[in-house]
Length: 404
Image 1 (tube, rainbow, N blue to C red):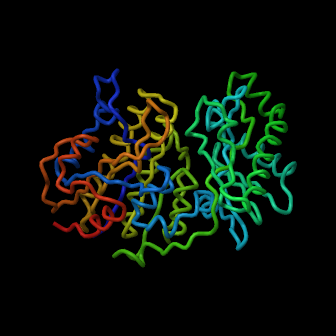
Image 2 (tube, rainbow, N blue to C red):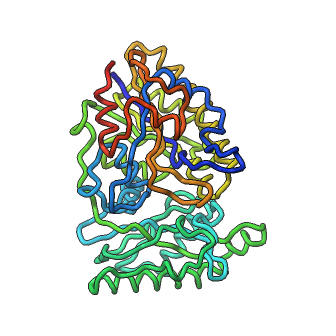
Image 3 (cartoon, rainbow, N blue to C red):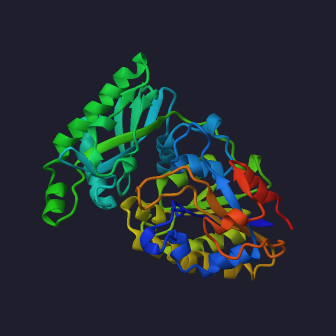
């Protein structure tokens, strides 16, 4: 048996009045996810343990079966692994967004989805001006970057920027949790304000403003941690090899620590314009060579953060027709049976534009499975599924044990 998980980041949502009180999943045309639901078994999965925020790092680690309290060290270190940045003892890593500040408000968490080329130049500029023997900046993809701090204390409270769109940013500046962490919090807040002074009139931002685009006029560091202690998946579950396919450093970094081969796909953007066909074909090729594939699609999450309901529906339909369809049709032809699962990691409701803790719908299918009575794939139909409500590692244990 081989296995593939197709994860639509942030795909789950809440009923929306303008959709006739349907969720985007219910409103979208998804014949292939519905087909899997009708031919497979369904349920709900609680991906975020008590005491942890509903971030993609927590939820994806949970989907993959990791014990969050024992392995979680923030998303910065996970993204560092994807970027090839080593985190040494005594070093702290943080995600470092380029954001757009407008007056006293954090207008958006993505600097208007700044291009990677523009962002790379800005991060290099900041590293030249603000980097020193303790602080280093590393460029990532679009607005997602890395800050590494020697001697940093991770006992600080950081607000993810996607939690405060169009809200005052000052109340969400970094706060120390104890006296020893005060110096770290103060240094990071000083960096935020220094970046604002440096970036305000940078040529890239002058050009973006002239073109009517949001400027990338501040950094926003968050999710601090040290190097995690994670076992490879092959030491935990009955697989010998695996691959991860994603446009974002966070998921690729989880894959590195999980012992999965990171497969890069040209044109994979993490947005609605991502290379769906390239990712689907890469997953099919990997599935023929390996036991396990983790295919992550970011687009629905970004649409949720924008509060863009029509775009979220479009991203869900794209996932169905351009990812699930070709992969399902290919695995039905394969001699060796393949178990396929589809699920989000967490909801990203368009109404509030940030992640929530709600349980997410999942479906598991292979050609010999005995189906339950669910006929469509969505948040409410899954409540009637035969798996009921699972928590944490129960999903992947079920995935690897499901043979009939």
